[in-house]
Image 1 (cartoon, rainbow, N blue to C red):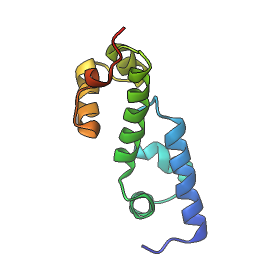
Image 2: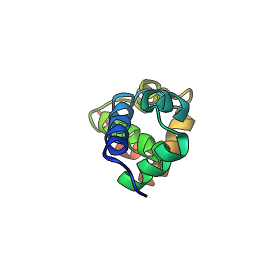
Image 3: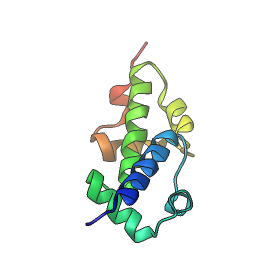
Length: 110
């Protein structure tokens, strides 16, 4: 996909916004407001630059942060709440999707 320098810069800014919003569930419509770009161009451009979809990128960085919290002694329920999940089950399913193992495998037992 051909992206102009402006498009590339905008997509890098969107990536930064996603990183800053690790604790929130992000809707692509919210990112479109920030990017002032068509959805298809943003989605395809992001995938072209980073090799993953926007939603998978956000999920991955959220779960990496969650994993770090677990490894530093946080409880699964605490991490789930901090990352904005309504239930630990939803958090656990998302975690397994990224790491292939449940969050309890990464939890430090005191």
